[in-house]
Length: 121
Image 1: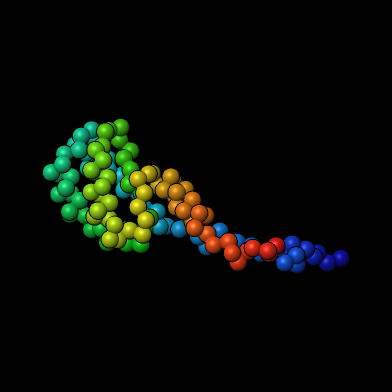
Image 2: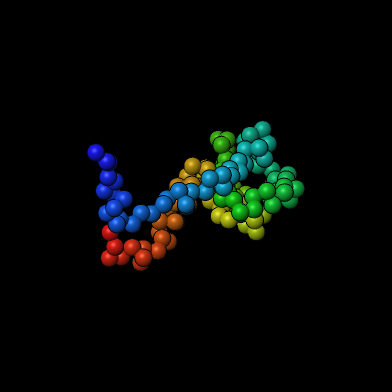
């Protein structure tokens, strides 16, 4: 007796979600390493450090800007990182890498064109 794959013969259209998975594209950018004693962000030192970074390393990547230290980070610090990274990074999220990946998938699902699947099985 031969095993018949009835699902393959049913004519169902499938969506390959792995095609949308950014394998190694999510990069975390932790602000913790730029803090003085892991508590305080010194503006002058931070600006100098941002100017010295080779941002081309984030080219085509999904950048997740976050801080793992329990510190109060001013909003301008996140914006400054975004200004430097924007010409290189594909997407930038103010989140940890896992949350950034989740947000990235939400955008993909929201923007997904379903018209080829209308009236299909």
